[in-house]
Every structure is written in C-alpha cells, then in structure tokens.
Length: 467
Image (tube, rainbow, N blue to C red; front, side):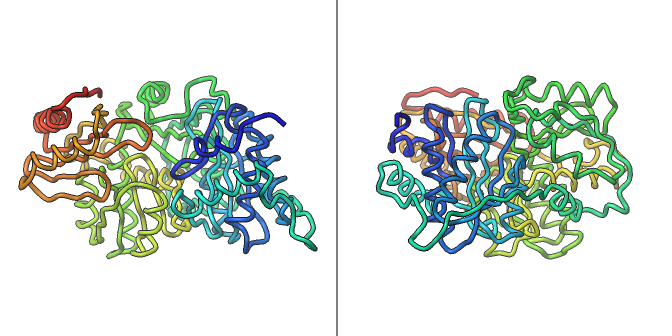
C-alpha cells in the first residue's frame, strides 16, 4: 500500500503534539499506526483511550483509523465526537484514561494533528512519551509493531460518550453564577469548536452573546482561527464597537486559547487577562501559588504579590507548566501566548474557563473591559519580534556579554535580562532559524531604546531583524 513512509513520523511528531499535512504526511495508515503506538506505549495499563475531534473535514476519517489501531490491540475507545481540546483533557482527568484530541488548532485546513495525554490529563511531550510513540508507530508501519491484540485478548469496542453538558457545568463552577450580573460580549469562534462549546457554557447565565462564526466549518470560510494575528480580530473589533459590548472574545480552532479586545476594539494582552484571573482566584484562595511564563508582563507577578499570592516564574510549554503546578500546588498558571491553566481543571489549560472568570470580573465591576484591566496595565511592551541570525548561540553569547552586570539574568527559556530600564527575553524558535525577542519597559520610549540596543547587539555579525 502506497503512502507516507515511516520516516514521515520524524517530521510530524513535534515537541508537544503530532501535526502534518493531511494525505501527504498524515493519512489513515500513519494514524492507525499511531493508534497502535498509543495503545502500547501510553495506554498499556489502561482499558480504554478517549478520543475527540475538531470540525476539520479530515478529522472523522482519521479518528476512525486511529480507533481501529487502538481496538486492534484489545483496548476500547471512548468517542467524545466533536469536542474542544480542553473538553478532551477534562475527560482524561475525570475518567482516568489516556486521551487523543484530533486537531491542528489554528493551522490551515490542509493540516491536522493529535494532542495526547496520559491517564489523568497528564501531558505528553517528546521527552515524556511522544518519542516512544513515534518509534512504535514507525515500527508498526514497517510491519514490526504490535498491530493486533495479545493472544487471548479480543478486539476492543468503541462507544460514544457526550460530555458537553458535564464539562459546561464544570466550567461554570469557576464562577458564582447565582451572583453573576448581566454582561454583553461578542464572541468570535472562528468557525471552530467554541461555536459548539460556548452556548453550552453560558446557558442559564445572564451573559448576552453576539455570536460570530459559530458554524462549525474546518475550511475556515471567514478567517483563519488564529486570534494571534491582528487581521483575524478585525470582524470582532467591529462587532464590539457597533454592538456596544463590554468586550469581545476570540478563540482558536480547538478553543483551548482565548484572546480579548476591549469595548473600543483594542487587543488586550494575555498578561493582563492573566493578572485579572489571578487576582480573582487569589481572593478565593489567599496565599496560593500562581505561575507565569517568562514573557508575561511584570504586572502579573506584582498583582500576585499584592493579592497575597506567591508568584513563580516558569518557562513556556504545557508539559513543563503542568509539572511545576503539581510541584508547587499552584492554583493557576498563565502563558502570554493565551494559555490559562487551572489546578481544579486537572491542571489543564482552558480558554473557556479563563473567559468566564474574566466575564465575571467585568460583570462585578459594572464597567467595560478597559476599565477592568486599567489597574494592571502599567507598562509598555514591544510585542514579539523575530531576529534573524546565522548562529543563534553566538548571538545569545554576544547579548549575554554586552549586558553583563546590567541586571538579574534568567536562562530558564532563552535569555531574560532585567535591566534598570526594562526587561527583555531572547529565545530560540523551535521551528525557525530566528530568535524571538520581547521587551517591556515603563513607557514606549524606553521600550524602543532597549529594543534597538538588543537588536543591534544580536545581529551585529550579520543577519537582519523583522518585526
């Protein structure tokens, strides 16, 4: 049978998930082999694997092939059907089973992928099981894998399970619904899974929603489901201004990340959303630990300390963050990229939980989002720049030497230096030959000066910088 060869697995198995072009890299043969691999590597001590999928046209066929691989090894499949990523990780935690979510998140329609977790919503990365899954799937494609149930073990079965309403009720448990005041919000689902999830979450609450692109359509006919790009927020910004809403929310394709705009249409950084959420959670649990990744605004740890909490700075990456949450019993963690993790959500990230807590803050304030985030909005930031260099390690060494003695240094994730004029983080991209640069300072002039200085030193021996 023709199709992708085992070597394709080296390309599609990434640091935290599986992702590739459908047909060319990711077809039913490859996915069936991955199902066998998950059954033998991640689910060897379990009786079943949970499976969910997003709305991409390729997802149903790929799920069928994956389920066939799992069942061929004697394990059952619990099929959630259409689901968001956070709904699948919730199922993994509640049922105590490993899980596979079929999605390519914000990528174009030609892509698909798989996000995996062990039983109990424990994340899987290339250093904690994903490499073994890759190798086992390659062996299966080569005809040397497990492929069938062990002697005396029959083929597994497949059953459907609808967890939409239980998950929606779980999300609502993070706010005081009975005390929630009416608030008006525009929500852009981007034709992704938030279109299914959001109506269930806000049912029975006084939240008034203007829906944008709630029709599930994995061809993304209106705009890509990637709210990180400003162009993809334009329809939401217009709807918020025209409708007089207190704020707007935008979700990515699998609805595990959320982004916000205020009543004027201005994009609000995930750091500020994180500060609001952390503040509210710490009111309910004074003294708790809250994690934040290195490129979050200084206002996040300042807010945590002011609320009586313990701020802990971490590097990015969901596997690392969930591990640190377990070690510190952190109640919450925020990544500047739009991921929000909750201890009481099996330490998994959830865009809808963060969105609902934010809406509660807006409702309690009786004011639009700009006024809610104003107390936390204390600094100017550059946003993320890509600095192209020929030798990333040499460039980091130059910057390290140039700024020696200028302030504390943190190398958990790239190079973070906190100078008296502001801080910057310079870290290698996982996918491109560039360094990612973020700068924050007291005002825009200080940001511009520090940005120019870091960029100049970084590319001083060739290369170029592009915002």
